[in-house]
Length: 330
Image (cartoon, rainbow, N blue to C red; front, side, top):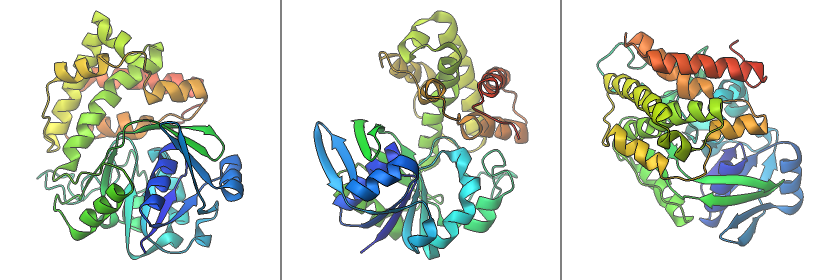
């Protein structure tokens, strides 16, 4: 039986845990606080389409208690991964796979990237400031993952599915390896969509397009996606940021298979939705600025590409988040 640890049993982590438990894997959770207490006492309750299933899983706030795993899903905020490197180590054996289910550019991005630039086989300092993840965990363990579902925590120990079921997967090398195919099959067995992509980085950039433009605009204004897209000035600003992000992504080897106008139109069609960055502000949660925005600006700097609109809006968002106590530049 495949041993899988979900490191960070929040909304997405809880969804993954429920699905993989349904698939027959030996699933454990790293959680904390009232959420952990409830899971230990009553099991993880997962709600989808009004139906609730209960999953009795081993859960701990001390990863060493769980022992070595075959697969570890990182379902914590990307900026928090460097701080849990030591906690991850007891979960690893020689062949443990790490699947970062996070937003933004991942620490493994330039492993087997073949961009032909000086960035190949180099860590991203915006998300791995001291290169600890790269050096002590290792990019060779990583399988890329792009997360699309939306879930929330209805109450401690109770995860509620809101929308979507796709987790795109891909090896950094692009190969359809035995390990990524096996992981995909297991996730599909649990009721998820888990396509294996030969160019997972392209999908990361398509999602990042919206994260870099609509997210900070919404965070600064409080506006929903449709309001941003229907306002001529904010729509133009989003397009300018997306043009810059596309230039940076293409210089790093990515391909953008849709137009900027089509991407904006898709976001504008989602009525009444505030992106995750605005939701984090309203809930008083730390913001994912570095993996989403700072990492792209790091690439712009290292590849000598101008990105004035992205730089300005990132500066504004950092100042806002610092003022609210939701971000630190240290």
